[in-house]
Structures are given as structure tokens and as C-alpha cells.
Image 1 (cartoon, rainbow, N blue to C red):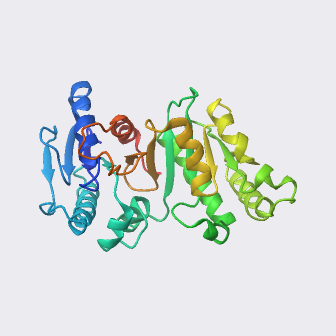
Image 2 (cartoon, rainbow, N blue to C red):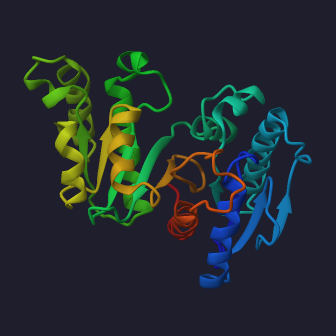
Length: 310
């Protein structure tokens, strides 16, 4: 790992706020951490401080062009990272339908990056080192971008245990937590109250709990969703594994929107992203808040310095 972290930043959909928040966040970073080197891929705003800029084509304003630029920037970023020419990736927000129209079959960055890198398993971690309530909140989504009706079939004991153990390894190696305390969020109201409101806790989560504990993970649960996140913020747990997307994201964004970071676990390099979307409604107005992108840049640098083979 080089002393000066070499970041690759993709600006996402050129019609959104990605280019604006990238410029603003990199300007702030250049003032506070002038040794950091950044390569920016995709649409760029004038004055963006970076070492190198690359774009697969000139943006013509169309949805098709936006999709090709979003996809091409990520693919070029992977070339730089896997060839050792960069240390960490920060991705700006994409528009998922446009991404799909550009020929990407995966529903989002996380799954696309897994295919491009050949990673055996990945995890989607939402991380905020401080929240509106004060404490840190880190949430892994065991299932990600799938319809709610598909969650019961996708949520298996093997998947949950694998996500718990992946999280445990990264909390140790990237966050430097020697023995992470992880909470497993329940699926059903009141963790099913002994089977009154469903059987996923007994049939899926408890076997995963036993397996992960046997692997040495300090894991508690299954714990009701209406209390587990506040318990984590209060410092009782270092992270929470949520069974499906919105139960984790609703709690996370309520507590940390604008200051949270999306981190992909399991890749051969750190990848972070802001916790917001393209915000087409304010794009071009110059009012986009770069706070989450700034947090994504800073966390990518921290994780790049801490990254070890796991």
C-alpha cells in the first residue's frame, strides 16, 4: 500500500448530482489531505481537483449515453484497481434503470462489482461513524436489491451465516475491532414471539446464529427490529445484520442520512459510496450537499490504509 492513497472516483449518472458532489468533496479533500491522489472517471465539473480524468465517451444528454458512461467508468475503474494502479474505489450514484438499459444485468453497484472482480461473496454494509443520535451505526443487508416477495426464498441460514462471518472479518481487519459484537435483526414482529408471527427466526436465523457462534463470532439475536438499531447506536453492538433491504435502510437513513456511507465487503479492494441517489430534481442547481460523498472519500482512505488480506 502506497503512503499516498490512490483513489478512483466514478461520478455516476452524468444527469444527476454525482459530478457536483464529487467536485465539492474533492475540493474539500484537497485542502485537508493534499497528499491524496484521485483519478476521476465519468462526467466531471470544471475545477474538479484530480490527478487524471477519463470518460468513455462525450455525454450527449441522452439516457443511453448516461448509461454507457456510468458503466464504462466502473469497468475502467476495475481495470485500474485490479492491476494495482489504484488502492480504493468511490462510486457516485447511478440510475438503476439506465444502468440496466446499458446492458448491466445486475440491479446495482454491489452485484456488478462482484461479477467484475470475481469475488466469491460480497456484503452491502451501510456505515455511519456518528449519527443524529450520537453513536455509530453499521448495518449489513443480508438480502439487497430484490422484491420483498422474494425475500423469504432468498433468506437462508447459509446466506445469513456467511454475511455475519464476512462482516466479522471486515470489522476486525478494516475497523480494527478485535472482537466485534454483532446483532442479528429478526424478520418478524417481536422476533415472532415464539412462532406466533412466523417461523423464519426458528427455521433460518437460529441455525445461522449457531453456525456463526461455532465459528467464533460474538453474535446476539434474533432481536426485534424495533429495538436492535437503537441498541447498536447506544454502543451495545458494533454492527447489525438486517434480513432484508428496507428494514435496515429505513433505520439507517433515519439515523444517518447525509452522513452515511455504503461499503462493499468482500472485494479485493475497499469500495465506498454516498448513501443517496442521483437526485435528478436538484441536479445542475448547485445546491447538492456533498457531506455523504466527503464521508465516502474519507472512509475509503481509512480502509485503504487498514486493508489486509482476509
